[in-house]
Length: 303
Image 1 (cartoon, helix red, strand yellow):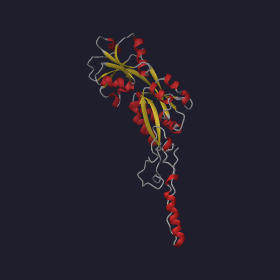
Image 2 (cartoon, rainbow, N blue to C red):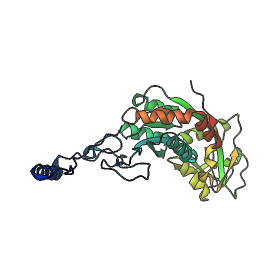
Image 3 (cartoon, rainbow, N blue to C red):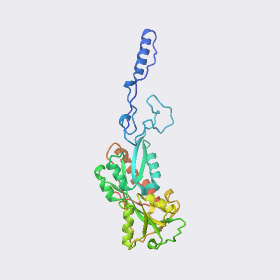
């Protein structure tokens, strides 16, 4: 909720004679008392002297009307930030989710913080501001549950694929090809959900590929493949669609060794929790789920 500090204005003197002059002088004196004016309030509801990272100025409105004396436009919506800490695998759909939420709730300015679920969990534990956490790994979600408002929800599910450059110079057509001589592979680092899942798949398939780089999130794995720095990587199916998938193609992993991974969403307790609850409602609703399906997620199941 955003509050607003308003300095006293100068009253226009409409009377005549001595009383009119006195009123005008009194008004000018009050206007000059700048030391008593409240600090501008930031959109997270925190005065500027004690603001937290991620706050923005309360003058952010979504109207082109003329600005009135209190710093807002007549009928304008004062916009408050909502930081959504979301797993990197949502990169291809977050812009659309942001736009959908902001259309439904013009008073919310969604600010996505994308990264590995383990890194996002650590940021929240260290006090990073935010209202929503979206994790690609149940263990990382459980790690921050003490910071959440109630239990989370299943937002969507995902699965793994082999990612190769569009030209596929190594001629990789199956998961087993990753273990061929001379084939170089990128995986997520240990502790990064996509990397841990990839190692489970490779172990189940009895494969030991030549891993030459281990990355901190799935976007970095895909970037290495797209740049031709490696012959292949293992990422989520959602990472070969949209802008993130430019320059790469997917090779399916057999169902008997592949994993279906849960994407969990929860509301972070604190100043942004009310806005976070509205984001979650939209993401779990039919329009939010349709966007996720377009991005190759499978829809979530809510209790």
